[in-house]
Length: 405
Image (cartoon, rainbow, N blue to C red; front, side):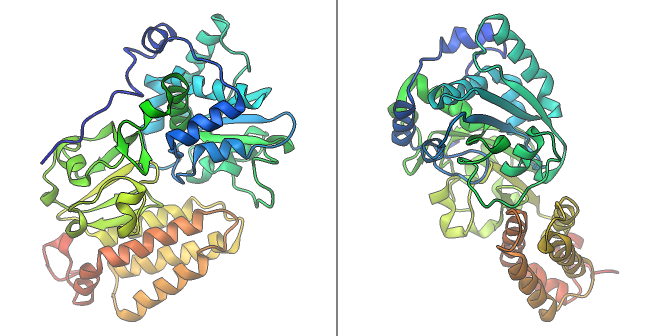
């Protein structure tokens, strides 16, 4: 099996200091709005925060006076470590991307919104740039609370404005009215780092590796039942089995399933691993996406239904509780999944889980209920055999010992 090559692009500098960054990458070239949009479009860069929206379209959509740019590194997803690693190891690449976007848009305000664990590294980098006269937009650091929904776009804007980091109903696009009513560009910090590289080396260089439909590299967080855990940088479209074997140091045959994309992602059973690649096109047939680059492995003696119930309970607790789907639907879904995993499983219970998932999907003030419903539906598909076992009061996790005995 061919190992997925590690591509030291984002982590290519010998250290996190400004001197090390400049030694490797040199100065950031300037680009007009039209030039940067064209370059990003040709490069095919998609957002690395989870949604995968085309970065060029997002930047081009910002329309109005006195725009604002925001680098989002809140990383509220419990299984993700990539943004924290990037901000610790290559903060200046992220800040370069923030500056490049701000300059292209003519923005007079720039914010970097990060989890508390990354605040020291980012503060040091901002101080270095100011001392060197490289902070034309006076970047302001705002700490994100440790909540799952804190990184949602409208929650980030609300926090920057001084409010709680909770999603709000959006009737107008952020690109038109965001921070204090100004047109606002919000990009994940990894997206901004790639933007800075494209500004330096061009779209052809960026497209020289990865999936042709979604090119470049991506940061992947490996976790769960793997011998090696952590963050690696690989080309988009890397084989899932290669990531498990060579990145995670684990035989793919020793893994029951993987959760791709995090708690709002999708479960993929082991029988579907063959040929699966970590890109939107490579996972489309499996009903999955790479999301924020998370690959979480489930061990052979772990119960997928119990793990899903645990995640659903967490997501219900982490909701903003600002709308019916979050206040009522997600707690009910978590309750039903807990019954499926630890109580008496039956077909009626499975039908009720599907019904509640359909009820919450698309009806929330934000996409938190949608992501939860997607993860739950994928579990019902991936662990269908487990559901049959639970109906017979058995479980893979207990080596088919009668369930509950």
